[in-house]
Each structure stands twice: as C-alpha cells, then as structure tokens.
Image (cartoon, rainbow, N blue to C red):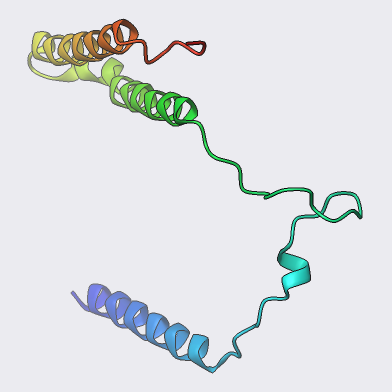
Length: 116
C-alpha cells in the first residue's frame, strides 16, 4: 500500500511540476517564412494543402480493421489451454466470419474500386 501511494504521489507531483514549467517557458511566435512550403527556392505556385481522397481514408480504415483482427487472433495458440478449446474456436470463427462478411459487403458496394 505504501508503494502505491508513493507512486501516485510521484506521478501527481511530476505532472504538476511539468504543467507549471510549461507555463513559465516563453511561447514561441511562429515565423511565416518557416511555415511556408519550400519549392526549390521558388515561390509556391499553389496551395500546399491538397484535398484528401476518401479512398485513401477507406483503405486506412480497412487496414486498421484487419490489423485489429490479427491482434485479436494472435493469442489463439494459447487458447487451447482453456478448459474448452471449442469455445475459443467458436469465438475465433465468429470474428473471422464477421470480418469476411464485412469485406464482402465492402467489395459489393464498390468501396475497394480505385477507378470509377
């Protein structure tokens, strides 16, 4: 109990000290020259901010979804140590079926097509 209270006290003290120091440090004023995009010494011809395609956003979301699937399925080899390995198999199969159905739905809706 003494160790937990000590760790909590140190965490609160450190965060308080860092918050106070951050207010004492001077704020830096941004230089407009440094913030402008650099194009080989020439003045920028257009805006450096281009619109972001929603296709890339969709692919990023799908990547995160399947990455999460991998993270959920990686501990499965240790799942056979449970009293009922069939329960582990059932839940793993359910996750795979749901993700496969989602991928098929996305494919049928044309979300994975790059050219329209």
